[in-house]
Image (cartoon, rainbow over all chains, first blue to last red):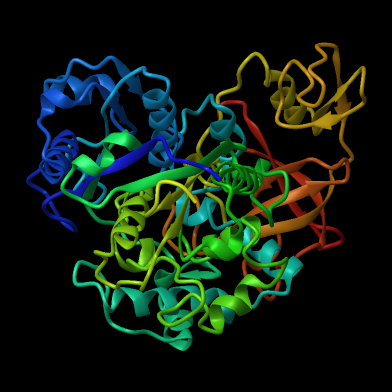
Length: 381
Length: 140
């Protein structure tokens, strides 16, 4: 028995998505925040806690005119927002603040007022990775996968099927960037980016934002939307250098964050109706399914390829189309959270029937960090 | 594959890593080993990441390694004349490093996981020598 103390009562993305060259990154934060406030029926003066990544919470709070009594600037990559949710739960529960605003805004495509990703040449990554020609996530995040395929007996076709199955969800979603159905053959024949990853197996590069609002669970029924309760969560980090992963075929951060989330929520895998696994590249759902314990070692590839995570499958996964087909601004975790909220509320474009429990799992950096959030339609279970 | 060393990103050594980079100039692959728990580790730092002990020693690695994983980058990079592999190798001592693999076609057919490799030092510029790897017995 686990009773939630905190719930999400406002959630929204930026007004536009995809290509927003007219809007700076800080304004993408603000746009999403204002939309989320409207969704919750609140004003900016109701907010006393601010969390963000990519920009400092100081800058976001000042820009929005908020005098916060609590901030969280945890910036561990794309899953930062999962960690913000977790920290907000603790902050509200312990009385540090009453109403937390978590924002994301990223001009990932248009580069308006956006900072770069470069590693300082004196950092360990700058010294021991950069000289060998890495060009960001397409060459670094992807580097472990050949080891994974060999050690688990997973095939290139099964890896490609991740993109195929997620496109089936995207086809049902009017806001998805890519909606045309595809095939394993087409995915494998697409332009090679970093072998074995073709373009279809790499995330989109788009603009957008999103925001969430959380309050104490006992207040949650006072708001216009159906509450989405936070049942449990977990977080962990591993390494900022892909070459220094403990095991290239497993994410220690995934395993630790996932186990803690299930434990704090008091749920079993069979309780999960809907799952989001941050998919910057096609291999991440494979790692996620195995490291979170949904699949045994070497089973995730066949599980996805056989349609179990596609529409009509037993474990609906990345139902917005994911980073591969829906959108990906650079730190995608916020959009995974938004889709979990929509599925629990029953308002998703590709609606999964009767979602009581949604697990939302994020990665930060390149297997550098992880955050997992368990959402529920009911306060206690 | 040809590498234009003028275009390679030059690492900037720090006090904690200087021994590694001067080792490369001397033709040595210098790792570190804990004086207490004997853990061998990389990248450099002045304490043992396994047990926290501050007394550590430099260990000269054998330079023998195996190919653990890689990608072949197809996007253009100013230092490379075509698609090139970025690899993670596992040294005989158990630590892993990123590297390019020299003297072998940059193709999935030629780059076989677990193939034996040995270190191959190349001078780039500004006094920096980088540790690359190449197949064992590949007439280099």
